[in-house]
Image (tube, rainbow, N blue to C red):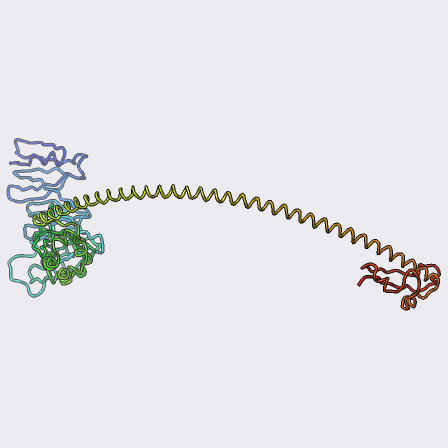
Length: 508
């Protein structure tokens, strides 16, 4: 009896051809290559079981003669370079095959085959905690075998995959006692779990979306740790000293300093942080009043790390360091809203009173301004009148000064003209006296020349004050004019080569 699955022939092979011989009750099944729209280069294999219970795995294309057999087409599992195959055998053994790889799920050999993604650590700030089961001690009494599947039955595994399987099984033997070791893998790296390896799954408390309010235990599940600077947003409840509750939304900046310290100290550090934050909020509430919250806010109090000493201590004990805090929002409760409304009403009443007072003050200012403007106009008019009077007086004084200056200039011109006239008269008089003196001197010179011509010793004559009507004494020659003359008696007739005698005549 032939019972093929109807979907497999057309869906997997693309086309088929059956030929049935009724006399021999045998079936000839030909598997052809698939259609072009399938990404495979050969027809999918199938599992054949005959009437004696024997099975055989066939990979096409080929012609298979069936006689009282049952066929079952196998599912194909393919892993890319960023994936791996997790194979669970019927014997209970688990196998890991790193991609790229292809394996057909044989129900006789395999219980389940899964295609899983590798864990990729892309940055040095990413870390992965891996546990490895190592065989130690003596074998454990058990009837189970390590691998009940023969090597020939591992269809689809090449030499490389078999070598990787052998390397994965090195140091691991299920018949021995087990010891677990832990190591931390830091990026960049790609992790594929081997046989006897598994990663640590962190289960931390966290906020549930979309309302990031209350902390829910186990809300965060992950495998890769981030050791760089991260943020933690939470809503913290607070009660003021006058018993007014409200909620603040805070964002903390923290950094994982030691993965080993964190693993050894706590399994849920976020829950411990929440308890430390609650203690800090209780202490802060004792020093804050609702009036302070409404008037000044909480930025000055909530924006410093000194306000959260217990949270800082909890983080340090878990291997973390708290770097900063930001107050994002204050969520008021009904009591705080009521207090806010009362304060707003008081502020509105005060604003109304202030507006009335400002209106009255403005009216007074307008009246005072009008009075000041009137006084200013009167003062300006008075200043203009005084200015015009001063200008008239200045004009009158300027005219009088101009007339006096004109009169003084005329008198000065008259005095200057008179002085010039007197000087001219004196000059003419001096010129006349000089001309008379020159004529007298010329007369005396002619007289002396005549004496020289008569061979008279002029020196003796002048020293003795010679006689004559013309010159009575030598002093008369020096009283004529204030001039100096030099003459020579050699030009007179009868000088006979006498030496030249200079004569200086002048007034003392």
